Image (cartoon, rainbow, N blue to C red; front, side, top):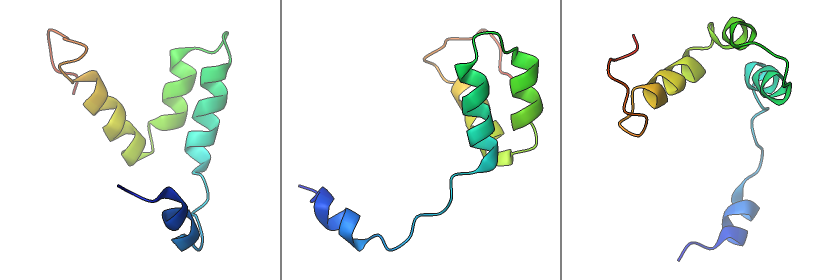
Length: 68
């Protein structure tokens, strides 16, 4: 079993939370925000875009076509 306390003690420094992710979370919390606004924030972050596309194309959502 993994000892969480040992892991937390071994971490010396955490990297800062990405600015893009922070902005995206703020947009997601806004009920009046549009998808276009979210896209304008994440479209230039390769990591987040790749994760969103992977999630959209997963079998869980059962989309008829692949999103490029």
